[in-house]
Length: 133
Length: 114
Image (cartoon, rainbow over all chains, first blue to last red; front, side):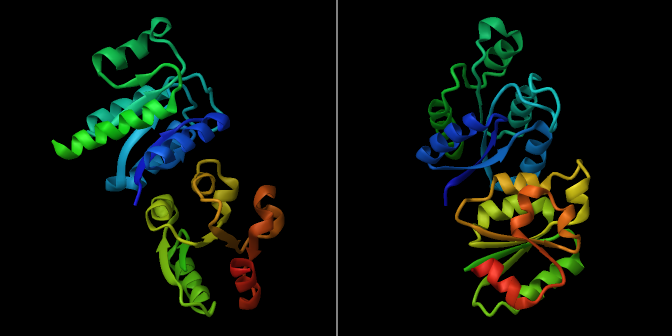
C-alpha cells in the first residue's frame, strides 16, 4: 500500500503536477486546498499519515485571502508532532523573511522553485530516515 | 467489490447498510461517518461509495466534508450520492449522481453498479 501523505495546495494546475510527482515516488496524496481543510483531513488520517507536503501561501478557509502564509502553521504543527514535512513554494527566501525562518531556524526542507518531484523525494528520504531511527 | 457507506448518523448508516445488503452483490461493506470518510476512502480503497449528502453539507459553509471527499475520490471509484432532500437543493455539479430517498432498490442498484 502506498504511503499516505497530506498534500496542501490550492491551485488546480499545481495539484495535478504534485499528484503526478507524488505517485512517481510511491505516495498516495490526501488533498487539502485550505488550512481548515488540511487540519480536518490531518485529524482524520491520524496514524495513517506518513508525511506532509505543503505550499506556503493558501487560504485559511474557502473563499478567503490566498496570500496568507498558512503553510507555516502546517509545517510547525508537523514539526511539533514529529511528522516529516517539506514545503514546496515558488517564493524565494531572499524576499520572504518568514520563509527564511522556517528554512534556517526550523530546518524544514523547502523547494523555492515549486519542484514537486524534489519535494516528494525529500519527504520520502525523511520518512525512511524516521523509520530507521 | 468493496462498498464504502458514508453518513452522519447511525440511523442513516443503518439504512445504507440495508440498501447495500439488498443490492445482491457479494461486496465487502464498510462504513464511516463524514469526518472519517476521507481517511477510510484512502486507506480502504473501496470500488464503490454510497454517500449521504445531508442538508447541512449542502447549505452550511462550515461543513466541507463532501467537497474534501470529492476532490480525493479516485476517478475509477463509482459513487452514488443520496439523501432525503429534493434534487433542486443539491449543488448542480452533483445532481447527475444524486438519488432522492426513498427509492426502489432496482434504481439504486442501476445507479451504483451500472
